[in-house]
Image (cartoon, rainbow, N blue to C red; front, side, top):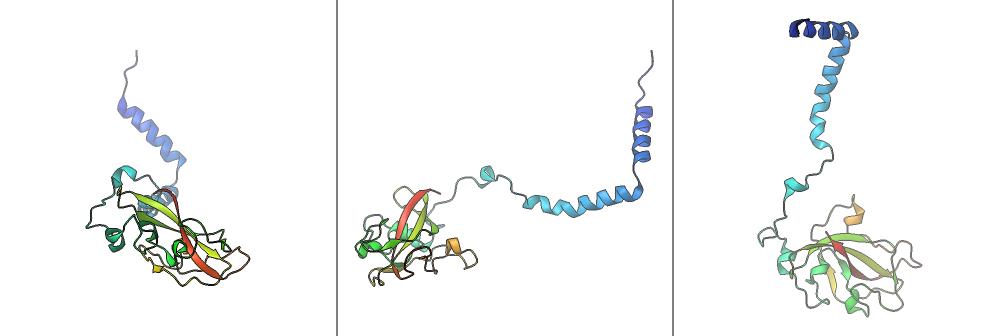
Length: 181
């Protein structure tokens, strides 16, 4: 019966490895690993557990979220209007999510995340312009809560979103609740 010798086994493995690789190849692999190592923290990994529950205390809320109300959808501080820009359709013959008669809803929209003060939860709101009628100069609001730069147009409210309608003439804006954020 032969005894197990770790030294001889280790020597055989290392000799086989050394015979199959070159110094330049090994240096290239080590160099590639050193260059790639700083990129690993940027990889998309789930950080849901690390993030924990969002802090919704009054100190961390935006100025709009602290003053938001849920009873009057014709006022600019209605909770769904945190990122709206323009005339409210609720003041122009339409509803919070419907265009007034004669106006056509744009097929595209911009989005915002608003906090409902009643339940303290964040909701995704899709803002859609109603087009095809002259500008309704009532209840003009400029909710720029968490507004982004123009290089992320889907989150920017400074664009007239009447793309894809028969007329590019802006009338008013709606705020459709999409779901929980």
